[in-house]
Image 1: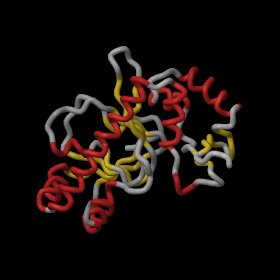
Image 2: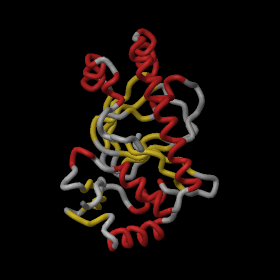
Image 3: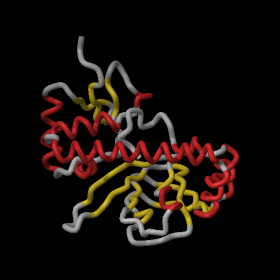
Length: 220
């Protein structure tokens, strides 16, 4: 999931032994989802966990009033709801394909056994999930107390791929829509569109190469 200082720097897949990942990727059951299809739904228990082989997806929660609240983005090398391997509780989250997505289905029991017999992996995962909890607290703080414009700028900077930075500007993935952003900052699509236009006018963001770019470094 995102909202990291360097969201593309380290994938959770890198914490697992290379031979395990290679075996899962090459021999696991592949399932492909079209853009817009649900990959996982709330209220269901499954015996498998999904590892994304290619494509992009988002994880979201649906409020009682029917509104979606996007809480993270996933891409190649990410597990979908990996935390579920440690619990029998039904998830309250949904995962939807933002592009065509191919996943590999891996038995939760198989993943759990790898974790149980590899203490260094168990500690690395504990550290990973602890960091995610801190991130979620930071997100909730911004949602609860920050202005919508501040939340949007905060979000855009978190969505940037740092490896594609150009002259102090960072690109937002093209598949992220205004509606997605609205869900992430607990606002409406219309408000996000107005704020994006405002931020373009004041030079905080710009449209370039069919993407939104945000200034990461202040002008000298």
